[in-house]
Image 1 (cartoon, rainbow, N blue to C red):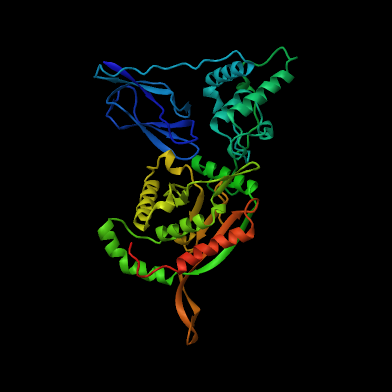
Image 2 (tube, rainbow, N blue to C red):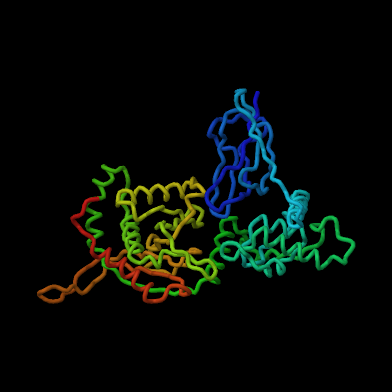
Length: 436
């Protein structure tokens, strides 16, 4: 029998590591090709890792809550075929620099302290720190206050592995006069946030799940990063409602897809972003990055109440049929928990449909490092003044509000207001005689 090394696959741009959340197979279990072996979680999305071969699970090299880097071997599978060779693992060459030596030392500390690191608690911080950074901080006895004081060089100012290693190195140099150091820094008492206690005994106290903690960190970081300002505009979508009511049945029969309002709105947003490329940018420190592609994020509510933002890539190149297929595909896979990490990467602008839950309008928080997000309000029948050559009269129209939140650091009112007005113009000029 041959042995096959199952490695953590590449999970999209900028994703370098993942946390193992659940093993679906145990040692000795049979596994088929493309069958899921384990579940993993990244900062973006949870997903499964399938087996590339069929056989028997011979070894499991990591445990639940362990952090694994992309390309690392996570399990050994014995196969009946002798033609499968075990991939050769090329050990990286480490130089003799002090930084490289420090990396090796810290990695060893992490490995030795994995079982006790779980007791470290950084939930008291409003900042987001990756599991790897938390593990290093716990292994080195770094307090929450010290961790928050580190200036991050990563995306959105996050503290990276290199940042915390430099901090550890500088701290060790400052403490060089100390000749002794506890062999197990984790064993030292740490200050934890006390678990809240129900005053009347009837309240239920539930800890946030992993995704809710991530969402919480992202939202707070976005508000602290961007100067949020909003513009609102009311749109008459009567023509769109009439057109959809007329074609939705034939559309579904011909295309095999349900036609909702979302792809129609996304089509208008993509057109407006082409007209106003200043909204299709991101911010990195003191630099503005002008995005070449228009990749629309669509906020989707999950069955457990959490939120995720899958991305429609090159949305401006899709016709209405293609947009409907993309919206339905991402929405369905989001609800089923089948999104891949790459499905949530690369967004340049985000749309959220608050009208789904009956909200007339909202003030959404920007999805960093983007500079704008559009909230779609509920469509309502309202009395409105209708202008005609014969004069004005009152009629019943289908209207909705568009709420545009944008980053006032780089987007002023003229651009932010003009953009959302252009979206409204595209919607109000919708051709009731158009084909799909």
